[in-house]
Length: 144
Image (cartoon, rainbow, N blue to C red; front, side):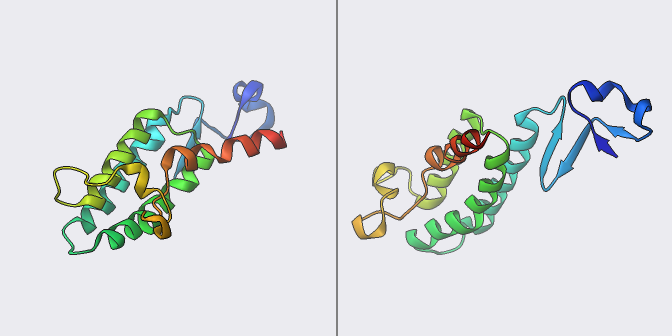
């Protein structure tokens, strides 16, 4: 099976191969009519499921920050280097992440901006999604 792009997508008989409209490769769906929502909605649900799994455990704020960095965000980095992240999902990830870090508290006692700082400076070394997700794109365009 071959996923055809551009002018080749309408010439299946010419080459004698079977063409597909979309293909899933390592979690990411590629194709002509695939929207960002189709890729990111599944990732977002997985993100929420992992946070829910660890939500009721008795952990310190540092432990919760490590869960976010190691188990949750690592799944997002790969997809974000291939498919651009819509702003709506970025807001959902940030909101879910900080709700998880603060646990049952109704408010956030420390500004989010402080938590992005290194632990030496009073932060949790939490990765700032907006910078991390946008950073791979300029390097790819330099290559092209």
